[in-house]
Image 1 (cartoon, rainbow, N blue to C red):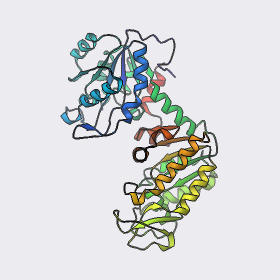
Image 2 (tube, rainbow, N blue to C red):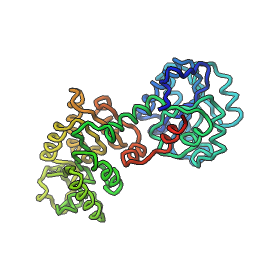
Image 3 (spheres, helix red, strand yellow):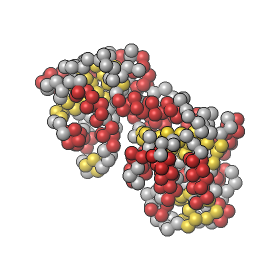
Image 4 (cartoon, rainbow, N blue to C red):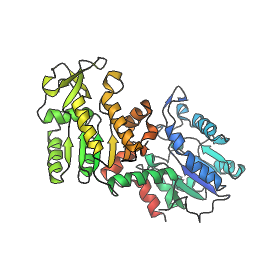
Length: 396
C-alpha cells in the first residue's frame, strides 16, 4: 500500500493534492455535523509536519458540473480553519491556469482549499482532460476520501493515471477496519443489519453470510422477513415482493451454517407519533405497525453480542427518531459499547442512519471504528472493488 506514512517519502516543499470528503450536512448555510471534517485532521497534520503545501479538493452535494451558490465549500473551509487553528486560503474560481498561480503564491506548510470540485464539468464524468488538468496542480496526490472511492470521478480515479498517488491516514484506517470484518476475521463474528429495504442489502447479506456466524435482521428488513415467514405485521413498513429473496437468505444460511435471527416481539403503534406498546408477534393488530424490537428480541441480540468477538452494525432497530421507539437501537449501542470498552470485541459501525443514531446517543468514540462512508461502505461489504482504491493500488 502506497501510504503517506512511508518514512522515505520526502514532502518538504512539495505540492500535495489531497482529496477528502467534506460533504457534511448543512442547514441555511450552517454546518450541522462535523465528524467528516474531524476525520481528515490527522492526515492534514501529518502533511503539515512534513512541511508540504496542501491543496484540498472536495465536494458538497450534486451540482452536476454547474456553479451552485448554496453548495460552496467556503463555510467548510472556515470551520476547518477553526478546528486546525490555522489560516486556510480559499480559491473561489473553477480550476484554471489561475489556480496554479494561486497555489504558487502560498508558502510551504500552508493550506489552500479549492472550490467544490463538482462545479467543474469534467469531474463527475471522469473526463481525461480534466483529470490531467487537476494533476498539474500538484507534485503528488493523496486520497483520504474512502466515502467517495466507489465513484469513478476525475479527482478520485482519473487523476491517479497522471501523478504519483498515495493513501491517506483515514482511508487506510477505514480499509484496515473493513478487512477485519471481511477477510481477516476473528470469529465468532456477527452482523446486525437494519434499514427499510431488504432488496437494497441482499448482496451484502449474501456476501457476508458465507463468512459470518450470525446475522440479526431488524428494522423494516425484519418486518419483511416476518411477513414472508408467516407473521402478521399489520400495516408495518414492508416489501411485499421479496419472497424469493427471503428464500435465498434462508437457503444460504443453511448452506454456510450461519444463524439468522429475526424479531420475536415488537413495540407497536397505530402511528409514528404514538406511545408504543410491546406485543408478541401473534398479538399484533391489522391497524398497528412495528416501530421497534421488543425485550425478547433484545435478549437474543444480547446473547449473540456476548458470544461474539467481532461485530458489524449497519442499520437501526426501529424508528429511533421518536423516543418511544428508540429503546432497541439504544440497547444495541449500549451492549456493543460496553463489550468494546472492556476490549472484548472488535466493533465496526457504518451507514448514514447508523451514524445518526450513534451521534444522537453520543457513542461515536465507543466503537473500535465508525465509518462515515455511505455507498462506499455498503459496496465494500457487497464484495465490490472500489474504483478509487483500485486506482491507488495500481499506481505503485
